[in-house]
Amino acid sequence: MKPRTPVRQRIGSLLLAGLAAGILPGFEPADMPESPPWPMVDQLLLPEIRADHPALSQTDILIDVGHGGVDGGTVYGDILEKNINLEIARRTYDALRGSGYTVLLNRVGDYALSSDNHWLNSRSRHLKDLAQRSHLAKEVSPKVMISLHVNSAKNSSKRGALLIHQKGKESRKLALCLQEALNPLYGTDTEPVYGRSYYLMKHVKAPSVIVEMGYLTNEEDRRLLLDAASQQKIAERIAAGVRTYLDVHAR
Ligand SMILES: [Zn+2]
Image 1: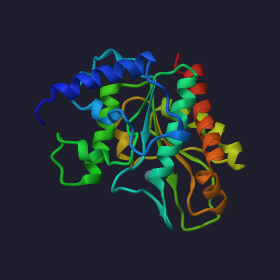
Image 2: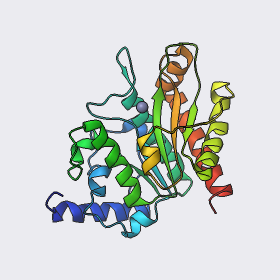
Image 3: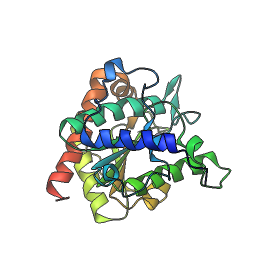
């Protein structure tokens, strides 16, 4: 456990309260600065911050932005998954906030969550990163968590969004809502799959899904994932899927 930092804690509490009350502005993807002028969200969710903080207990959706910093995720030429995840996550954040939900992004810039993880004694940066992500979800206890990623395959004709769910029924339902919302955009009829081996899925209690938003190895998907207007469409479909789940299943 690292020593407490009261100043950051105070700033963190204020900012979280602002996020919950909707005082802070939403992200504007078009003019989003390289590094945000406010403290990063994951700095606000260190273990020092109490889990019963009102802002944390009111979170509807936690968006886990896959990879970051030295961990680029899937790579295709000079295209890095982590940047696509962040871009679409910001847009999803805006779309869901626009519908009146309380939403948290666990990464708003290009950095690894593991660099903030001082409490897990593991030499594996990747494991630290994953532990930090699942720890955040436990602290925040959102209604749902969606983890945004980009896929790759040896077969370059493989394409479309793929939802990966946990063992539970609720996670499966959430995956189906998102898969049905996304499939038409890619012209696919993919079925969600159960992901037994995913750390995050095993360690997060709230219904959680991994959203693989397309294949970097497929030309059509690549175009969708890199084009701003298509990124917006993907984000809106993800938001629509989450809304359907929360409206129908999570009352
Ligand atoms: Zn990934």
